Length: 175
Image (cartoon, rainbow, N blue to C red; front, side, top):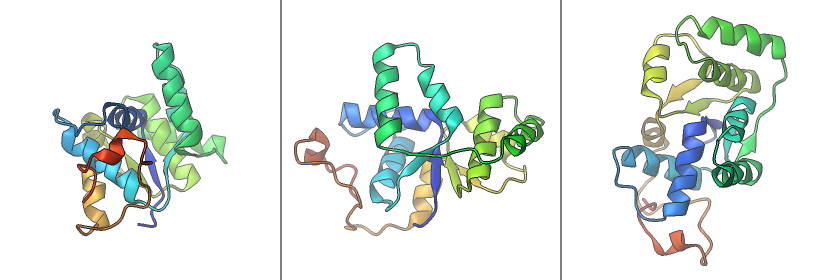
């Protein structure tokens, strides 16, 4: 569990939605949402967002939702920084040969530059397009990463919702 794990903007939204809804996710992405939230709670470190993820969240049209994302990014998640802008720009252009989402490719380049080990995403097209591309991080779905953690049933999470938080009354996030 010593991996430094980044998340894309969709994952930021899904964690926020999970916290706000409180009830166990039951939609088509429920397995991914549960795995993502458990990963956040059981990891000793936090999840990280890159500058492009922050920018994407800052472009959310709804002011309240944008503010919630900004608060989570400023308080809950770790922030990465770019140390080599030239590398990030060149790497983004290299990755665009395999996937046409420039922000997605830039997020991978930023994650590589910062030295993240893993980047979690729900973007199945992105995952498929990058499957055979040589990158220095592991790009995967939250459920794939969660399964590698081998958290045993009954294990205590590193982060536990405060007793006043409605999630504290739920048990779906426990293993």
